[in-house]
Image (cartoon, rainbow, N blue to C red):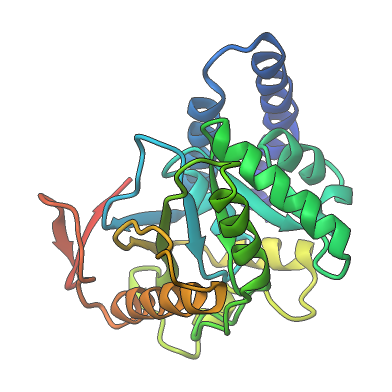
Amino acid sequence: MLRVFLIALFFLIMTPLLITLQWLLDRLGLPGWGFIATRYYRVLCALLAIRVHIAGRPVRERAVLFVSNHVSWVDIVVIGSIIPVAFVAKQEVRRWPLIGITAKIQRTVFVDRARRHQVADAVKAIVARLKGGTSVVLFAEGTSSDGNRILPFRSALLGAVEHAALQGAAGDLLLQPMSICYTRLHGIPMGRQHRPLVAWYGDLDFLPHIRDFIMRGAVDAVVSYGEPTRPAEAEDRKALTRRLENTIRRLAAASLGGRAPAAVCAGDRPVSGVALKSL
């Protein structure tokens, strides 16, 4: 329990400082938002005993819409430690104590999929982030899974962003599929029965899950990036969604099976059969 207390203390002290500093940088129009965000998440990964492995090469030289599966709240910490990004989150997160204001300062786009006009507002916000040079992560399942499977992707939000881009609002839209998987616990392969221990899904309460995750400790996460792609001219939103979903399923299957994904970074060293590099 001491470790839980120390991590909670770090979060309660450092998070308000992070919020204040990033708010000042934004107000003054100064760079550094992304640098601070990734370092903050890397510290959290270290405190939470998460070892992050990267397969493939994320686009860094321009803003891109990353399309991903979703397993847990841990995804935010892991993905955020790799590259500066904004996330798309459900509307309820905005009201969570401290986490809500942190997400807002991290340029999170909040969406209520049940209200059409709010989805339109979210699309405009995503396009604005991309146009402003901030990459965005879209969890295309619309919810989180148990870590063993990928749920069917929802095409509405992705299709709306694509449509906005084709209208010239975001210029040349670049998409990059990515998968996130949790593969080891204390260095031992998890297997199907243990992956739901990391996953946060269904009706699981947030705070008890964080406590249990911290006490369990030492988790390996694999983030795999596919080849960047652009929507084809004659491709409708459902076809685009299926294409991305199929790619992400292949990436996830390779990670969970300990196999090298189809595209990996040159010079990465193999770890447990998968060509990876670690943060």
